[in-house]
Image (cartoon, rainbow, N blue to C red; front, side, top):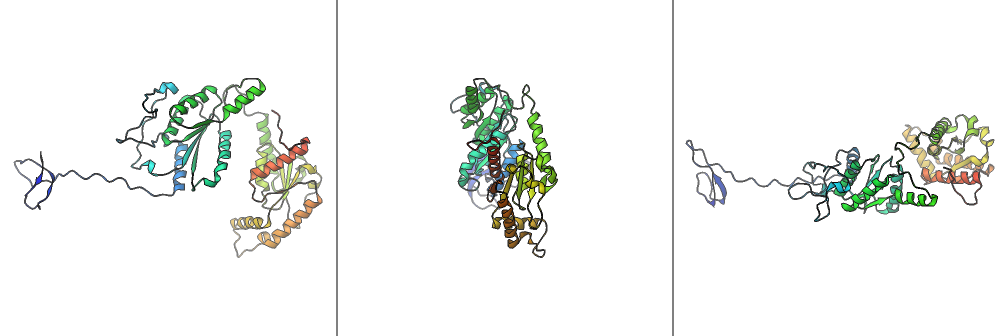
Length: 407
């Protein structure tokens, strides 16, 4: 093959100064073939999608493990960049012998083109309940800039990480994505390995469990076991407290919405209020904490069960709500049940809503020992905290409101 760059005069071709390749003559010559090198393939078109949908999709992928080894950064020839610190060749054995994860194809999409938000990896050797609630509490301080505003955050929970190899894989992935790692690891050697790996690969990290464990150990004057909650050797999690919670949940479900009023004496807590004040979800939430809860609906024109006024009044809690908010909630409820504008009901009419709240208010006034809790704009957890604080304060006669528990 002869390649030249010059002005060519060939039949049926215009004069053109270019770089061409001509095939050498053969026995049966054929017309000259233009074998100009094809132009470079244009970069893949960036797909514009919803940022929120992207984050949800990515979260699902990471949690399912399908894209755990996905690379966030690639060098010029598409090979994987080392996670070691610059200018240093680090052996995996320094933080536990973990095989290098193979690079996966990115399907022609440059992952750095899309802003997924800052990632926080939550790593736990148990269920991750403590860790998840701690991170959520911290993120609550940044509500003004989360989601689609200034600083979107994407959290990923990795629970049951109880061996070093899996721990290193998660931290490597965090390094690839530029994520922060927050962990609760009861085993001191696992926690130390996580700390060293994060320092080695430049991953910002926070140990949630170790500082408080060490403080409690110093206060008690004994050493911690270093075993995770589900580790062999620890007492079974299916203990007395567990079955107490199960019993409380079963009791609460049977007593929902005023059912079996004869059992109100057996309840730890009794909730009273008009429809749509959150009695049922609050009851279930409290039951999961081990309290037997009964709730009694207050309906205008319907007599309340006699046992409501016979039980210890210090365990009865009244719930009330703003009438405008209550009407909005009831309208939504009526619509979900199929009651349209053509099937009007006084259930969500303002006059009826106000009348029912006034009816309930008179009952509460006749029972001044019942504390009246305003639930407007409150989450179930907030209302539950108020109920439990008042309950334990009355039960234990404390000089300062508190919720006490003996271990």
